[in-house]
Image (cartoon, rainbow, N blue to C red):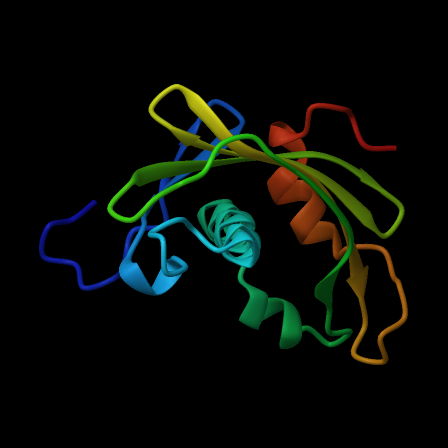
Length: 153
């Protein structure tokens, strides 16, 4: 990252996995200093969004297409393994595993050092502005294709 840049870090890619550092602040925790469970969903969202950004997919650009597109999470399954606490330095690790019709299948983990804090399996659907499912734009699939675990049809 350019040290003169004012852009916040979007993390980096390690192979097909995106890595996003997250620091735990007081605002993320309950009165005991433990991360409130719903905040893990925010960290996962940041990981998915910054992965797309690094892959050259802009949410704003998707909305500006002649046939605009967006994403909605249709399913998320989270396994909470350990508690994250105030001042922890975490890594959100994200993989976009496959595209099946309008669905993107995504795997995510949050780690503290080598310790698994939480893991998620996410299904997101590409939608039009009318809220109906649609296939992702070809440019998005092309950008993510080399990073998928499974070849797309």
